[in-house]
Length: 248
Length: 290
Image (tube, rainbow over all chains, first blue to last red):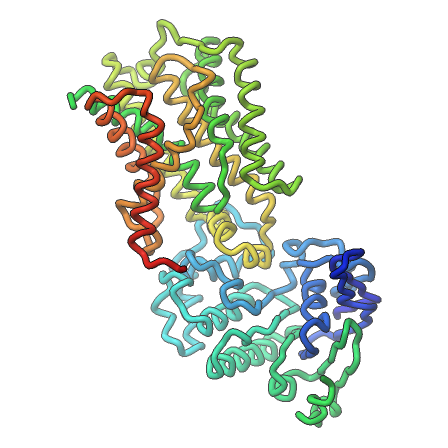
């Protein structure tokens, strides 16, 4: 369970360009649910996701994950239970490291990185088996540098990497906005499959209205730093594109 | 160039390996420009001279200088990460402070190691040139192998990813600030070991021995890259060997210029021109982004 209590955040406080990004958000997200978050540019949805991830600290309010208060924990200390997929396909992987090396770091997410050399035969077979499920032919290119792959390939691999280690929460910030339509479909389908298979608590921030209809079992809409709409269950299932458009 | 001249340049070049690898670590692995180097190189020399004069074993002197260098590097790292100063400024501050530390520790501007031959003591060889060459080559091989091992470990992967994609390593649970402090400590330990080896080789420590030395480390890294090709999927062993070879080529070029009758006053100018030419060659080869 992720619980947000009266989350407030103001950027550039006291300056001419002050932005009140979040004006008191209260939200409860149950375990194993898939929430899609929408809103116009500047509505505060990315800020909210970053506050849950720990890369941004709220001005006030509480963030509880699994009953534990985490708003004081920096991002790296939350990594044992949170996996992330970024908007920029380049941000989720290290370009100069090979696919195998990136996956090794993925497997070690949230644990100590010690002085052992963990990339052995058994590890390579395990990674290759996982990568084979993508049907991208990358399972034979484990030693290729991540930077030489396309954005779609990197985003798909980042998703797999993110779930190499045990995680409970998957945060996705517009993961397909830099991808072509085919790669977008592929990455979203993969994300949905992984969320269901591993029963993750997932939050997806997106501008693609089609994704709001197609994915998730709850949709929330932010507007100017407040929670405007929140649909679950049958109401979410019967959500139409027209209704959604009306929110903006 | 006479053979002796060539040999001297080879020994000095090999002794620069730690310096080159230190700059390689900060600049290429961590993507941080660090110029604590000038201070930590001298610090290595100072600690070594004091240790040897007090009768320490040369190996112990090398270890002590490495430890001293790592403290200097960690200091720079803490200034950079905890006080949010730019890494260049943190380096300048550390380097400036170290000048006084070195001078006070040494007690005078220059401390000769009269009547001592630490490399002969280390290797048991009588011929001073043979002894220096053997000791330095063995030590550099050991350092290179250790560094290669480290970079391939899980910890090393996290180190390499830190300079490569900070958002990613943070999400992977790496404490980036701590990692940078460790990286700068390691780099300056390597640099200090270079200072130690040079001090033992030349037979004295001098308060000014490190001034401008960071350029020699840069030259080693860049010459190595110029020969082995940058960013073309070079394996780690090749990258490390290239830095070591780069340091030797750099010393050879300097020795060559001097033996051709160049006024030593021009040395720094020539060094700057060498480094600039390598950067220019690399940049002119690829199409401009403008």
